[in-house]
Length: 394
Image 1 (tube, one colour):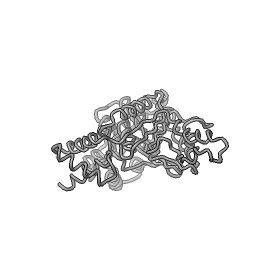
Image 2 (tube, rainbow, N blue to C red; image 1 turned 90 degrees about the vertical axis):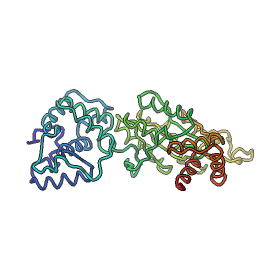
Image 3 (spheres, rainbow, N blue to C red; image 1 turned 135 degrees about the vertical axis):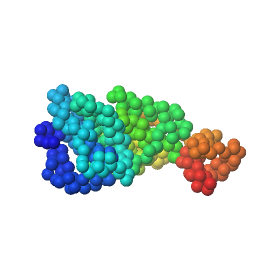
Image 4 (cartoon, helix red, strand yellow; image 1 turned 90 degrees about the horizontal axis):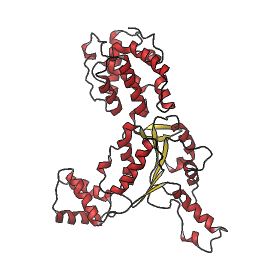
């Protein structure tokens, strides 16, 4: 078959497997190499074609990102034309005389949730219309390339880099703090649905699940287009560049995540954050929110000396207002308190129960409190550490 008639998917002609210039054994070698590297299975011609369409940028997928999920009818018709040409491969009708290429089983299967969902959806589709719409919907929900593969990213040298081994934690894994989770999910649901939502500051005792709660959100809302980008305090200067990068992916929603945030009085980076949240010359993209965690309600450290009458600041009230103005820029502030003794023991009990382990109340109380007294206090992190210790000693 010839692919020379392709229009918007002409990048496939650059893939040596489909350009018709290699012999059967060379093609087989390249397909098997990709199958092992990417975890492709079944008919490798079909699997590799779907992988390229899902991951490599083309005019359709990039237009969907730039236009917030919208695609013109004329562009859709051109894509349908290309799908008509590719139908024999997409239906799995292109077979090789080397039977191994038709029913291949890789050493390790592909674990990309979005790609595997696309494979399942295409399994029972026949017409070019159906298949074209399936790809368009995939690009709307997941994007293409790294945006579809990864849930979380880090900001590195003016580009976003996918985090391969992101935590798989879900909201149901976080025990307690029902009110805090309700506030967090309510705000995030509104954001994902395109409704007004606030930047969020999660503040309170250490080890109470603030960071885990934000990470869990991405796992919950990934299929609805939510992604996380983590940045560090020294990178706050480049927030405008990051905002501009994320503005190009309008079909996605992004949480910019600042973990364990606080500033000393001498550190000026907080001013970049204030400007990014509210008040900068360039508006924050509507597809971006900032979520931060901190152990301090007021993010900028203030000392008693700052409040002293002897302070040499002429307008002392202005100085005080400056220290609290950053926290006030977050529209939603969620407080996390240290658990009571009963709540702490309940967290341990629930964690053990998920491992099918039941301790009697007295043993749980003695062992749990003994662990607490020799560690960093009563919180969810300490409870998890006790559970890990207990399971390791069984």
